[in-house]
Image 1: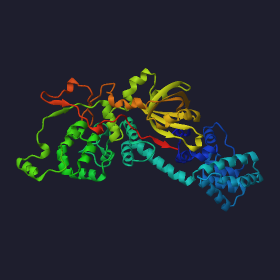
Image 2: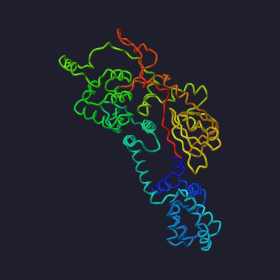
Image 3: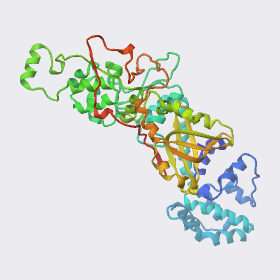
Image 4: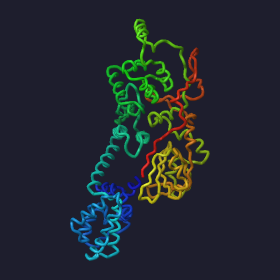
Length: 509
């Protein structure tokens, strides 16, 4: 992603190069920067001999593919096809580095004898030697580029379909569902919560509430409810084929799924849209169900036209969960939240500490020193980066890309590898459209993140119709007081008392 603004692909073959160039082989062989300089017209492309232009013309004189390495060996150094194939095999076994080195003398001597300067021959071998740490075949890169182009086209013209497809393909890829949904929302896609009467197993597309758009809304599927089996979800969907469920009791009797499955959906807040039940109300209702009625009482209930679970009990008004608790439970049971971003609950405190948002950090001028904070999404420490780690943070405004040099990493190793949320002070490094924050000091903000469940949103929530959530607060609100005569009490359910948000970080090494 950092390479794309610099490469600026215009043709399909540019994507082939893009796929192949960000690899350990080209990076270690010092092929990346020469190619970029030549592409931008900052460096002249020179070919000492015509046969070299024939082999490397498409890549501006820089060998990026295994096939090119073979052709250079044959055309410029006098290798036989069999020897070139041995060279290819040594480049393909990237887990066993050093295999290319045994061809050094033969390749350099062959090029020199064919009229190339020794310095140029040595530089060429150095580039080819980088393939020992994994260089792409051109055919592989071309196939990869076709998939990349098709994916980009789909995301550009049908972002709703793209979002639903990615969610249905989890677990996979670089980004977790929370980041996929966030990106979709930023591109104007309405993402709707799990609903007992409309969600299928997979995420599906529904008509948007905006009549002026041809983009569909994405309904999250039952597959996103943690712990819910495909078999139980299938029973729920099949039983409602002719008629929507009217209540939890109706669902329980018609679908024939165990109470545990109903509980998992309640924890994922799947009854709010259809039944108007919050998490706590739904769990309280489910606790009144029986897995099996005794025959004597069941017969009496049928004669009276009632069921055991419908026997009247004193009405109980449960205290609403705090806004932060709702977000915590969303992350715990669905992996993301359509409510407020967790970091927004901490923003007043962060602002007092002069910690800027990720968006402000990434738009700051080059060379500025600042401190930002966010949830850790991705950690990357590629072998070709010589100990440098790249980290992606997210807050309510966007993401920030960090560069952590080896010395800073060693100083803050425990925090970097274990913290769910960090603050980073460092210097902005801007090169064109590519922006990084070079970290100097890192602090663990996991205790702050753990306090989200006890907080209310620092601003008024907007309540909409249909699929919009209505938020309660941890303190009594006169507007939501229960009717007279209704007893109000809090409820302790172990599953609804968790101390922090846990975001599964994507780690790549």
